[in-house]
Length: 157
Image (cartoon, rainbow, N blue to C red):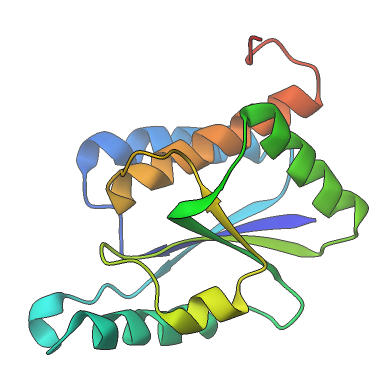
């Protein structure tokens, strides 16, 4: 299985770039992972948020395959503990999922078409984070899941 991360727009906050790259490098020691960054669109070039979200969705949909297992990161999604998240990764491996795709959308969330395509909607917390911070939290949780699955001492319960 390969994990694909799709981020809408580049990570612009400098304090997030280095730790994201550090966790991505660590994850590669456990499982193949690829980061895909789509074009960034800004609201001032669109008359309304729904059109912006639809345009972002079109960019994302170009990058996914028909048999991908799609996980949208959304504050209203299902919450998992870190251990449950690790078990989810294992279950996808056991189901012979070829590509497990995690998608972090833009600042205004996702178009309805993305929710229709998603296999799962996941929340990292009941709190709201910036879409840029979610990127770091996601890669840290992916790394944590890898260490949990290997029985390594990074995660403490």
